[in-house]
Length: 355
Image (cartoon, rainbow, N blue to C red):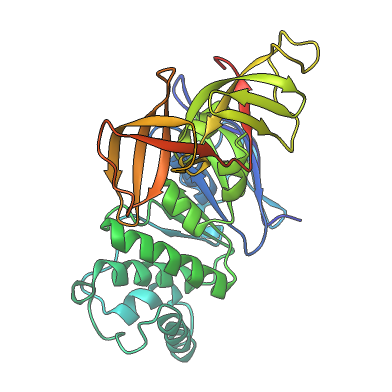
């Protein structure tokens, strides 16, 4: 039985539907992420699970027990769900140990002290319990907020844009630390973010949200290499669509050459069977387009972005179409220069043209 079950949940503010027929489940110890642009409904869904909002229809079950539907609403404080906010919400007048133990006031002094010590060790701040929040860095404060949420041993932890107040480098490092802490604690969690790098670093499974719905609920690997919809393909990673012609059920040809597909391709609706003449849009990621000086196919460098170990080149093909290519940074080509390229595509992703 899943730890959390969200079944056809709907929610609206007045006549504005924010969550639409949302369905997903979460296993014990699993970390999930709701990922999407602002206004897609991801934070509202988190609030529905936490108990800060009530669904207009559908149900939410935790450990097999209904905690919210159109008729029943278990109070937030009775759900045993922890929450970490983007502003940490630490008490400035309390020490780190007192902040972590704040939700343990019903425990004995001995039990509370032992649990606080466990949490300090878990987050790597064993000798800093007597310090105050302002004496810690932003990353350390975020770990304290995480420990405070974990201390009462909730069934589920919710994280609402927890890294948004941190700089990029710290955000990337802390996201990996948070995943490690959650896994060591055996805690199931749901992260909400608009940053796919955070989602991929932390989560086992990610739901791509759009317009209050989940377009794909899958592993980060499959979202990148096997997007279910054009929106997911556009939203995850970078890529450009090139027109292609189907030569057989598993072969499609684009301007840069022929591609063999391990999976049946999505042929245009006008095709009775996959065959020559069927037109598709083929997704090419920057890592699919390889710089090769020996290649006869040439493309013009029209833009470049230095990324340290790599350049991200925008390349114009003979037809005028453009593709992206990640190239080791010791290949420093000038704008207007023509370079050899070839395709190396392991996952052929196609969609009906214009859809």
